[in-house]
Length: 139
Image: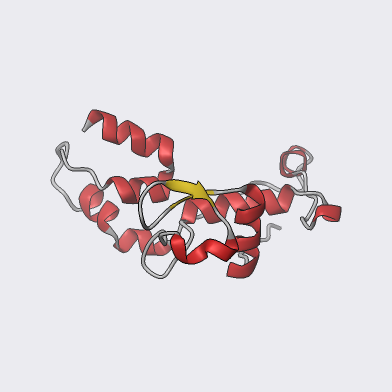
């Protein structure tokens, strides 16, 4: 038998984790800076109703799962648990809201042709900076 486990974290824990990791966040005034809870109003939200992007939340959750217990994490060795077949897989799932966004509109509902104007912010939020930079380069 297999069991599916869905994990999430409250915003306060994500903010504490982002600060601990010195997560680079976009500033409303432009540029990037390491996240600090005391300075939260200076940072731009990731999207509609979400301060952190789906990718940022996934990265922080994986960090918390593997962080030692004495440091506030779960202390799990995910790779080891998969190798020993305690877990069959760890599958980060992005937000469903992305499917309603411009990214899905551009890629899934457009004619089968290359689109010159890619939604770079949405690509960055979903896939990360490296992939977004690739699309910016080829655009």
